[in-house]
Length: 592
Figure 1 (cartoon, helix red, strand yellow):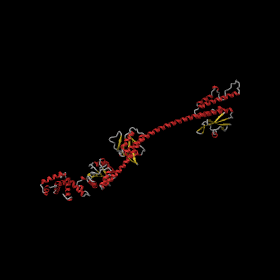
Figure 2 (cartoon, one colour):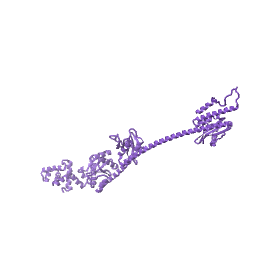
Figure 3 (cartoon, rainbow, N blue to C red):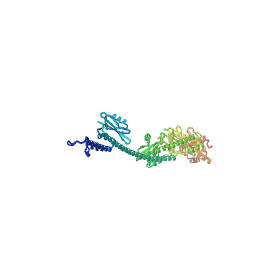
Figure 4 (tube, rainbow, N blue to C red):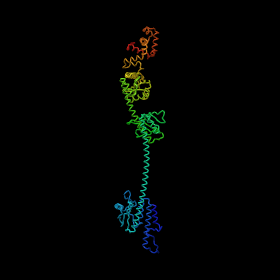
């Protein structure tokens, strides 16, 4: 545009001999000029104008401006009018926006027919028209369509050719500059792309290295079988954030890192379920307050929650990656452990079922060693029944958890209305009951415990004892709690199904020490006690029937108290001792 303004100013001034178009006016008194001189002056003036136009075109900012200057100043070459101009863009001839609408379609069709060659153009009202190709070195830049009111002279055609040549040259330079700019921009773009690709490559390499480190760490966890603690330890090492595992109910299973709350908050069951559903709807880890957590799932089942404590919101994509891989590894680990636990539980239950039904000792001992339970030594059979719970797998698992928490080494079996434990430890009178009351949310449960069992063959019989203890407890005034068979006293032989063995056991429990004393010392302590009860506790009648002095009877009764440990003044002891002496004498045949 600067060149255009300079050219326009040049035409309107008389600097350096330049004259307005049409020449200078002659002074009235001046002598007439010769025609040749006038022609030379006009040609020089035209050349000067075309030179100024050429400079303006070479200074123009783009191809459109070069073509516009040529069209606007075509008159500098002669009696011409610019009918149209075209630039070649992307292989197509594009009309200049300064083209007139008249004959536009016909002129454009004719220009395209010329295919890069000069040629005549017919324009109504113009006797002469020509389409002039604007060619550069081996390339067509466009066309300039020129018309004239009369046929141009040879000099005018030469000037027109000069204008076309200069315009084409200016277009070549402009096209070359544009290509340079485009090449420079393309080079800059390629360099930026290369830099971006290099950055992505560096980032990808770093991410790959981090991912490999995560994979290697989780593989080590799987190989070590460390479970939740190993996963949280590795995750804390990879992220620098405290890592934790909770079961699906919100109880803490493992924590690695600082900031462990003591005591750990008790979960709210309703809020916990809402949280699990909300997290399950998302594709990846979810932030809830200061924790970034994800579910540990296997085949759609929620096994637990793996979380990072991120109070400063520092977690990035690497943290998310590590958390996701850790959750996958933990899911595989927990699934494997659960499968093993289910197999172990099934083997335990099969062994317990066979022991309760009766099995041979060698097979029982071999199978118990295979499942890691020691059947040697004394065992107790424990029967558990809760009024608000059916004896399903869930209830059986709760009984197993409670027993394990109390350190009871047990085999577990399930029946239609109760759960059975075969345990090597005598249960505490209240501990198991209280633990199950908390587990089930109610105290409406009853536990029956057998007497100690020293032989695998006796387990079925002791199972009946535990059932008897449970049945007696449920029929008593305090129906909920724990009852031991060896504390039932007289009720042991009054229940349905009692037999000779129960009678012997009852007599041995209450009179065993006296019987042993009589056998060792050839005494008659049991007979004395039996006569005492037969005589209704009357000292004189008892002494007469035994043919001994009253003071001797008093001495013997005191010795009976000392040897047996039972107090004849206690109503419960007196009743059990009296029944035991009757059974001893009538059912078991007395001293024989």
